[in-house]
Amino acid sequence: MTLHPTTPDFKDNAHQALHDPELQKALGHVQHGFIYKRQSAVERLPEFETLRESARDLKNHVLQNLDLYLETYERNVTSSGGQVHFARTSAEACETIVNICKSHGAKSVTKGKSMVSEEIGLNAAIEAAGMQAVETDLGEYIIQLRGETPSHIIAPAVHLTKEQVEGDFRRVHTHLDGARDLSEPVQLLTEARGVLREKFLAADVGITGANFLVAETGTSIIVTNEGNGDLTQSLPKVHIVIASIEKIVPTLEDASLLLRVLARSATGQDMSVYTTLSTGPRRPQDPDGPEHYHVVLVDNGRSAMLGTEFEDMLRCIRCGACMNHCPVYHAIGGHAYGWVYPGPMGAVMTPSLIGVEKGGHLPNASTFCGRCESVCPVKIPLPKLMRHWRENEFERHLTPAVQRFGLKIWGFFAKNPRLYSFATRAAMTTLAWLGRDKGRFASLPLAKGWTDYRDLPAPQGDTFQAQWRKRQQEARR
Image 1 (tube, rainbow, N blue to C red):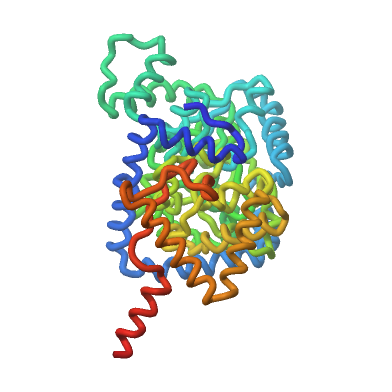
Image 2 (tube, rainbow, N blue to C red):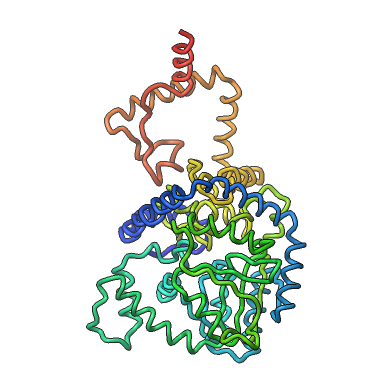
């Protein structure tokens, strides 16, 4: 499946995704692998809803005092022997990291999973500078072999089947026995572990993301299930942390609150297998660790979201729960969204970071069922934010003229209740009669925006207004 790399091609991407049998097979694992596990983890923690409210309030407090906490964090990182670098744009962030690597004569760089590094295009920048960048998270390693981007923010290779991964390993790992058995997932994992072990030992620089940055101690925290993050940051002589500015939390206690809702929301675990805290370079009494410690804090459009109707999106802790529960994501996967962040959170973040001109299709790719908001561990009102982007797009005349004209017609009828009631009843009766044989429409005039990509069910029963009036009459009787 070849997807277009820009969000304006979302409809074509979605069409391809719906007709990709391997992708549809792989996406079937999302519901069983994430939804049921989250539900079980939440049921084991009676205070989960209270924790969500506390997490929301904590993140709101941080955003209202972000400058204070960033200054405190920088001061404490510096006092522990590290260096903090602020990057306003993707280009500045990449330049900073490449310069750090060059200053230490690096040839090989290992990386833990980091969505912000995907956002800024870090791997391409490292390789353009003549160095090798090796992804060490298993999912990230697999998609790097394929030349793809992540299709999910916590499970980058969720769009692939076991058979596809086996094919890639045989294609790339040509130094291994061609007759080896790779029929089971554990064998694939063992092979990847052996190949990556050599990369860990040879790396000059290790780069990790950060789930949280603790202002009071200057600590970065990562959560993983594979341990690759620990090897990435402890074996090379240089450790670089890259994170966006909203990852700051005030204290270690605050971080523990967010950790309680993060893993349960993401993978259905009480806690991830590894929760690793890193504070500065190796001290004289430490048995291991990097000699040099750098933190690159990336803005890249986030400051512009502060104080706007989209500020709530900066509460996101990147758990992926919204896409795990999204019926649109279940149908088309992550690559159809065309950029780094898929699903409901991507439908809000992408227009915020690259502009609604390029990302305007994404907030329109929602049923507004509300499942994303109901499972968000920090209670981000995602449907409301997507609606704001739709309004923004409409006000700026970025929506097609036909669509704007259609909304004006609908607005005219909606302001005249009796006319609206008569028109909807007449339309439903007509469509029900025309669709009486098949029960659906594969093509319909004035509805091609819908029927080009899906069938339109033929109406059944009375209109909503008629059903409401009937219930009111029955209640009065």
